[in-house]
Image 1 (cartoon, helix red, strand yellow):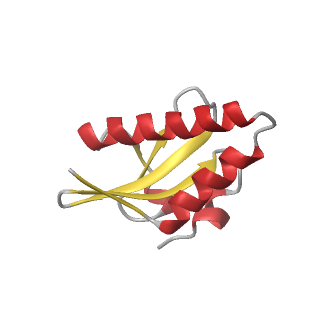
Image 2: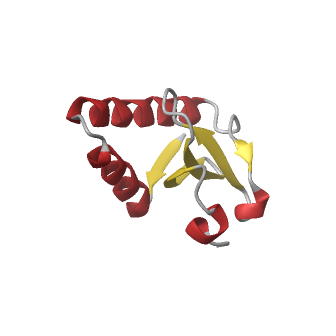
Image 3: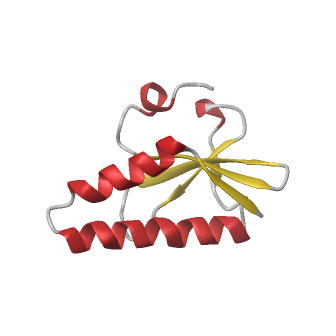
Length: 98
């Protein structure tokens, strides 16, 4: 499956990693994001369908990091990674309805 990463996805992940007090924790977060992406590339329909946040949008938890969510869409043979967001945030405001 072809994997595309929105610039916002990359910025979210990098920004979150920088917020950890210890740099090693940030690196573990980025590794967990990559692990989740690899799993989604193998099984893209694992994530929960989140129609309330836009047509075809799905979410999947970053393993080992509680409420951090990856938002993505599956189109044709493409996994489109869109955002990494803390699940307790105001998701409609953060994600919009594109």
